[in-house]
Length: 148
Image (cartoon, rainbow, N blue to C red; front, top):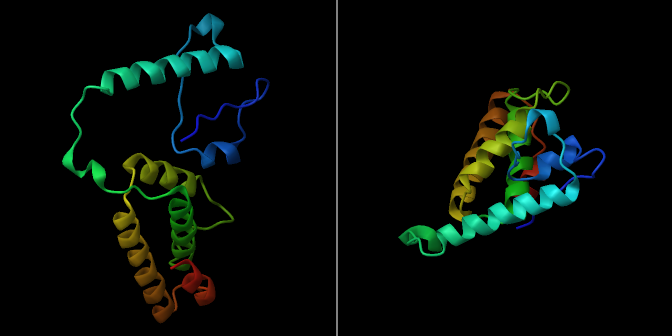
């Protein structure tokens, strides 16, 4: 896990923001809406500490032992998802309309487990196969085989 802070003068780029699993907003007074980097780090660190302390005595669920998907597995899934959405002509990379960024946020909020990622990847593979059979889209089978 990492906390990522942007540059003091310009923050994070859109590409950097898309790589983050969650975004944080620090509410401020409208008259003084800008925080310097040190102040932002201090506020976030304090909130993380308070959240950790409040969870320290909380009981854990029985299924908390299920292993979450790794960052690499999630990234492979997002690449596979984009490829499948292009194959079925749902996603047009020339006019992305923030689709992949929104789907990333959706799936990352869910905190998928390894088994769930395998299920989703299987669905994508079947979707690509069906699209190829029907001639809906062009799927690069070599890349599909490598990512499966």
